[in-house]
Image 1: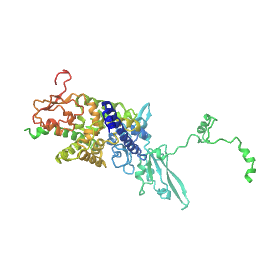
Image 2: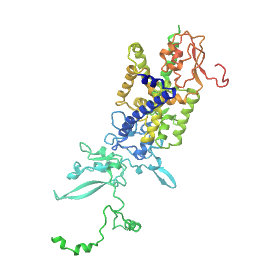
Image 3: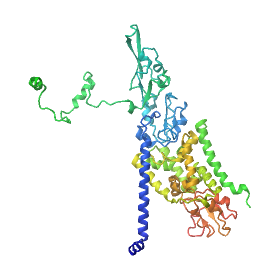
Image 4: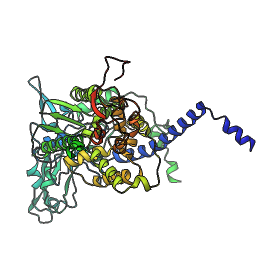
Length: 273
Length: 274
């Protein structure tokens, strides 16, 4: 009992301050952990389509101030701000092409109004006669992907709705003719998307005639793969040149065999055991 | 007795300012009426003068990004206005959440919850911890941390651009203020309120008290959302110098003896009695 009293008596102002601080910092850490957990979940929205000129998702999320000026500038009401309940980063602009696609205005009104630079003007501009001019065809909002199972062109039915809706017609979507061996006298008109020129505007997705669009826009990071530098087109002179700079020192995960290919082929006895 | 208008004049003025800002923003969005475009995070007046939320900008900086000069100018303009003149006036004159929390507080008085409820204790310094935490978390996650959870953003964006399930968030906030903690959000938790309390600490516009006229009825303390700032009431004359005072003027409205009024802080004759 006496010891307890003794402890009570030693709580000085300094001690009180320090323990209050410890509690506040501890509670802040607790709140911070919960809050961070929420943020990490909330900002991860890999399937969202951003306005033209948007920076890469991480940088975009860093910079977007959620003011909605791009949304107000959009004459087609394509863009809107994510509201609670949509499972998208709150207050950030996006569009759903099947509802309202991007109509690719040549003056791109949504980009110059961005106050923070989350929508980057120079990424949707090209240099013409020494001047930077807005060029919507440089936009990379996403990439159209065709589901060959549900696209009726792959059945042999003539459709080409997406092809005709495409503002970069005959470049972003080309029609490839293939012989229809089922009938023997018709052709397939197959839509083929080129990732070089597709802007991800989604006009094709909007135009698609199937119940759920057989062609749909995905963000580039989701839709595209990556080759890796070691694949080289040996039949293209320009690409073959990349070999010249390759060093002979190659690191491999497993030790390389010292033997030559011929050694393996000529010591064929092992094969017949 | 003061007339009804006199006992509500600052309340009416505040509602007019709050609502007309929202109406102008909404007109800007829906009808392309370009007096005020954007929202409270960043906007343009007449397509020329930029304004921006300095706290949102601070978080963006903490997240490791640099913004274009226009929005920076906007942020500085707002910051200077509240630092020099307005004090914490954003909270009571601009912020739409103020309407919600005032409604909760009014209902709370009508239900006599102050007299009957079990008190839940919450410190008024929580907001400053959350203010610091907002910046730390912005740095760690690379996203403006308060902006992504802010009910203020949900509400004003909701009114201008469409609400979605934000209604639920605002209802939760209302219930929190009504049944959990008196003035819980605006007076204890909101880091933006904390930010403007710090920013507006030295501002010129202040509520002043004349204790010779005071009848000690304490009506001012009943309505004040930050009643700790009214410590001098009935004791001594002077200006309310706390940064937490939102300059809402509700205390002036309800004061029957005209002991409270808006005034300009006296920086010139420092040391003299204001």
